[in-house]
Figure 1 (cartoon, rainbow, N blue to C red):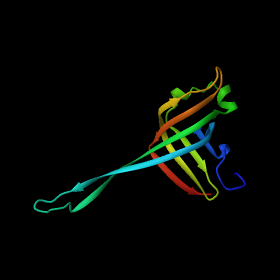
Figure 2 (figure 1 turned 180 degrees about the horizontal axis):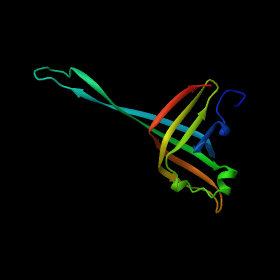
Figure 3 (figure 1 turned 120 degrees about the vertical axis):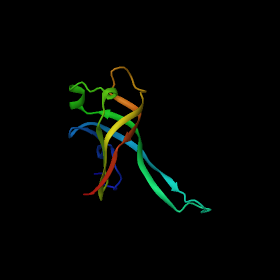
Figure 4 (figure 1 turned 135 degrees about the vertical axis):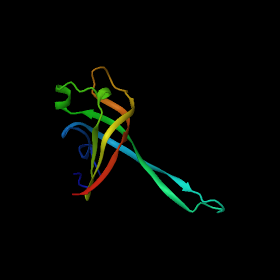
Length: 129
């Protein structure tokens, strides 16, 4: 953990089958949730709302493949079902069953750095540390 209490690149990482495959410099997460209005005949306004499913979208900046992942020949473009783990001083946030929706690569030839990766996660779990 970082001394100041803010996440560092070692505190934000991608994990596949329990193995850390990349560290991430920073992230921005957005969760959206739709809802459906329940209308009743003769009522001027909806009588209730039903919550929809949450959609977790996370944009990662500067992903660095771990040495082990590079040795194993990681291909970020073929990753699916991975997890994003964010360690904070008082909790751990895990986005699981992730799929990437966009990858932007701005690195030199042979480099294992991705500039921006946007992913969508099925679940978001918070645990106490």
